[in-house]
Length: 95
Image 1: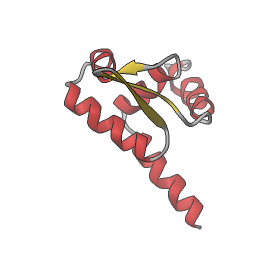
Image 2: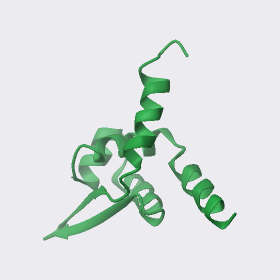
Image 3: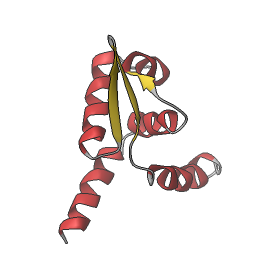
């Protein structure tokens, strides 16, 4: 039951349109907070907060290069989750 509780907590964290978009973006490469914020149409501080939440679940890692911090996907199963979400909700707009 502990593992299922952890799974539920991470799924609750993912369950936000901006966070789902962040996953979509990061599945295609690594990006800075500023790039992610711009793509999602949100402020950088809000993007940072969302990224930290998902990093705590093990979804993302960050790497500093000089003054920039790049985020990338750490959890390979996110691709499977996104395939399911996109197949159900983005490729079938009538549902």
